[in-house]
Amino acid sequence: MLVAALLAPMLAACSTETKDDTAKPPAKPPAETPARTPAETSSEPAPEPLSAKELKALVLTTAQTPSGFEVYRTVARKARPLEGQEVVRPKKCAVLRNPELKASVEASTARAILERPTEGLDRHTIVVAGWSSEADARTRMAALREALGGCGSIQYENTYAPGTREARLQPENAPELGDEALRYTENGPTSYQGLTVVRVRDVIVYVKADTLFGFGTPLSAAKRKELTPGFEEKLVRAQVDKVQRTLDQGSTTTS
Image (cartoon, rainbow, N blue to C red; front, side, top):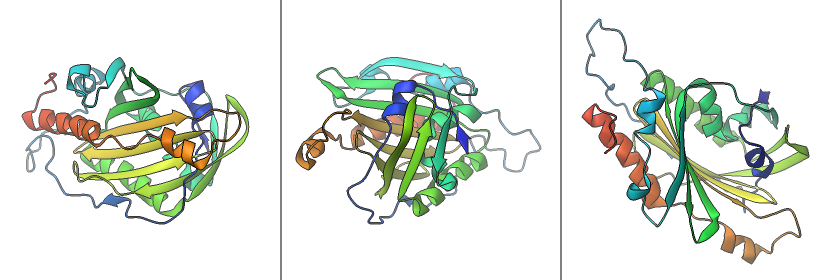
């Protein structure tokens, strides 16, 4: 299955492997939640999904980020095709490769890049995607969860980096946030990604930590562990809480 990739460096660097394949509970189960508008028995049409501008207002600003992060770029856009191509094997696992980029093909999104000024390798990406309905958002989460349950490793090739790369996927314990959440890591010889995905009604929040180890001499296990970022729980919670709070208020003004 061909999948588009957004940025050359991200596609070239996103190979990964995990320390083991021990299965862990990948997520808390989805919860039934009320729709964004209370028209349960009304004949009124379903509400429109959030616009790119509204989604941008849901993303954290530098003043709202904990742990010393700085937001140096935030971009909002309507759904559109991505540049480049990628082949992932097995095909059923392709949904787990850069899910926040795949979301931007089918939904409006807002994307923020965060870094700690003193730690150049510690980069995080936040993407907030507005789906057409809560049922649609649930379907996206279910697809991720199903794939994560059956994909311990993948191979992929893309437009920007010649050759086949391998990555290992590891389910991680998901935080108790939003209506449902899942978390996993993707590890390869030259890079690492840690992804937390949380649904709040018809909005899905993707928080990714990624580190490039380089293409030279392989790192020792100790050095690799030192350079691998952990999950930033305060950052994830702050972002999800802002989405939840804003949707509960029925407004997408920056809070």
